[in-house]
Every structure is written in structure tokens, then in C-alpha cells.
Amino acid sequence: MDNTAFGARPAARLWRSPGLKRAADILASAVALAALSAPIALLALVVRVRLGSPVLFRQQRPGLDGKPFGMVKFRTMTDARGPDGALLPDDQRLTAFGRRLRALSLDELPELWNVLRGDMSLVGPRPLLMKYLPLYSPEQARRHEVRPGITGWAQVHGRNGVDWPQRLALDTWYVDHWTHGLDALILLRTLATVVRREGISAVGVETMTEFTGQGADAHGC
Figure 1 (cartoon, rainbow, N blue to C red):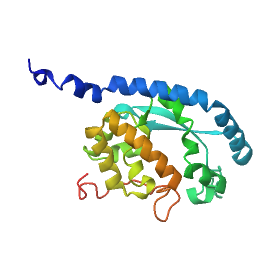
Figure 2 (figure 1 turned 45 degrees about the vertical axis):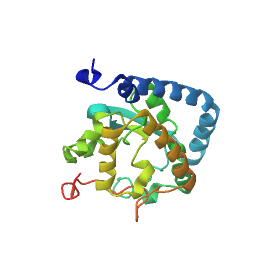
Figure 3 (figure 1 turned 60 degrees about the horizontal axis):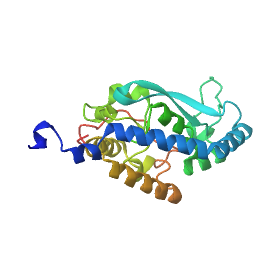
């Protein structure tokens, strides 16, 4: 009997099994949190001394199917405000210590808790801002068909140094092509990217330029 009449072959389904991916996320995040508990606690103490309270940065981000969840990271910026009470630009609030945390991706460690909870995956499109949701083209919005990740296909192709059309195109490419083997490759390449400290920020800014939705159709995203 031809198994393709009922969908993908069993081997192909296993190679792209969301259940297996989730199981791997649970196991890996639980082991990592246990193994890194002491370093994470020490880093939290250092963040508290260097940047003050709160130690964690919490923000609503879109997850699977665009549903919001509370993402947690170590804070890397101060809460400095201007005379009008508004927060100062990122480049004025990001400290040298915060830059080092970002360069080594240490600020992302608390997201292992999001992975364990099921909000995120180890690998997937990075969770961006809620305000971007209405700005995506239908194709770009497909990035939410999978759980967002701590690292992803776009992150190993330039991180924040990649422009928005290319970055979102890489995200949707991942949605269509992910396998467990590709996830393993991304994790290995992420380690190399962090070691080389590539793509930490976009040209001329401290992090990433704001997404406006402009030019998406022109770039075929």
C-alpha cells in the first residue's frame, strides 16, 4: 500500500514531527535550566548590582498563531528617561555591560523557561513585537505557524544585521523547510555565530531598526 495516499511517509513524518520537536524542547530546556541554575543565579545577581531592579525584562510577544505570551530576558538597559518622562533611545540606555550580555546572548538564558512552558521552542523565528502583527504581509505572517525560538534560521544568517525583508523571508523559509536535522544545524551554527559575535546590531543602531511594513511586497516577502 502506498503510504503517500495518507500523507507523508512515516519516516518523513518522524523527521518533521511537532510532537518530537516539543519533547526535545522540554528535555533540553529542563536539562539546561538544571545544569545552568548556578550560573544563571550568579548572572542575575550581577545584573541586579550593575543595572538594578528588576533583573528580568518582561514583555508581551506574539507566539504560536500570533497569541501573546510573556517573554522573559535578563535586562540589558537602564530605565533612563528624558525631561518629558519618555524612555531615552536604546543607544543611550544600553550600557557596556548590557552590550556584553547581548554579544554573548547571555540575556536570552531566561527564555529557557519560556521553552519549558511551551511558549517558545529552542529553534524558530524570533518573537518580535506585538505592534508588528498588523504590519506583516500574509506571507510574512506565516512566521507564526510555528513556535518562536531562542534562535532561528535568520539568526544564523546575520542576526540583527539582516534587513527586514530578508529576515522575514528567512523566517517563512524555515516554516516550510524545518526538520529536526535543520534545527540541529541551526543550534550548531548559533554557537559559532555567538563565538564570532556576528550581527549583534543593525548598521547605525544598537539593536535592530524598527519594522514599518514598508517595502515588503517589493521584496517578495
